[in-house]
Length: 339
Length: 256
Image (tube, rainbow over all chains, first blue to last red; front, top):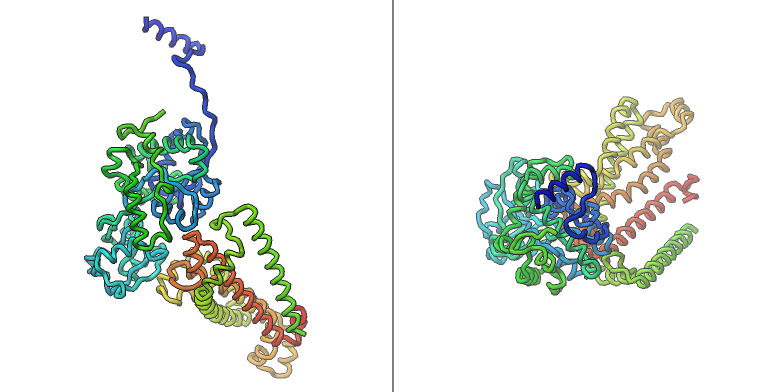
């Protein structure tokens, strides 16, 4: 009987006759237009890749979303997100806290992609600097301002800070290659590879390895979206996390997609970045709860750490800067539920 | 008379600034614009008062870098313009190079200056010099070439040497152009110093602006911008005063 019904359906389909759906058609969800602005230029930063993949594979469309992808050039994504000109963006958990604490910017992290500090301190591989204490008497760079990470390492390593010469070095790793500084703060996901390509292999002092409670990049939205369109946030995150899962499953395919956005970039370098960030996105928490999982205690630890080392102007309610309700809703037993 | 006119000009400019500030103040209060988008002028003024020492100190550093860059850049430009005005082959050789310098995006090459000159003052001065170079080169060149040919011929008939003609005719003829180039270059020197401070500096108004932007601290950002503008206005006023004094015989001195 079932075979006959199937045959009839096939024949009707072949004759181009509409076939009744086996179940009632769900009420179509109106398409929502949203803008995602990546926090930097196009590259294989994992949250960017998640969105690129979701766009490429049509996951946003499946979620009734029309997503415009933009890229920030000089930090303007924060203001655009705060004013809801963009609805989704990326930023490190620490940066989100700083913005909320110092200026009351209404940002909220909705998925913790990077599960560890995104910065390290690099020395040349042939440098005599082996321990934190060896930083004394050396020239140590900082990118914008002296970071809480650095101050924590100074404390943990028992470094006499008066014996360290600190210098603002901006964002050009060539100052380490050129020997102008002895210790250079790097974004772990890409700058060690950049330096290696310049013929300067490096060793890293990773704050996470010293117990500094850093967290990496998050996907974030604004309070307005959270309050007025939580279902859009859910759909965006669902599609993005599925894109992310695809990227992890097939990294070559993910890089193919990245290169469509990151024209002119070096493919091997992008692959290095992707591999590094995928590794940093996984830990026991995510293995149990899925990529992007969030842990309140880690946010509290991060806040307290930043407060201790001057990274925050004032304390902030961690429940105002992150929410794990979406990630929790989207995963069941550590697997993303697609609907 | 001149002092009175300067004061009047200053008064008008201050009135215009005050009017804009009032509009922005009303706007920001009426629409409750968050400070990370547009701080109220009163908040900027309060911050400037609080951090007056910092702004003065950092402004002084930026000014010194800009001044050094201005002197070096304009001096080199004038020297090269002299050579170009004197020799057509030099003109054909050097002018394309000068255009290359002009078209080089300073922001793109600024980090290289840190690599070449280190983290100190030198890269900021070099960028300020580079950015001031072209306007002064063009103005100097055109100015030196603007000498009346009949007057040149007349001096030659009197037996004047090339050096004498340069000193007593070409340079005076070029002065209005030189002052014009100086006005443009002064402001560019300030911008060049600020750009230099964005890439590997721990002092200066550019550094203040860079950090403020990273922290969304727009009150101190606008405070630094206003100090920079004040320095630029003061520098322009100085050049204007010098121009009126040196070119008192020239119609341009009356017009400015």
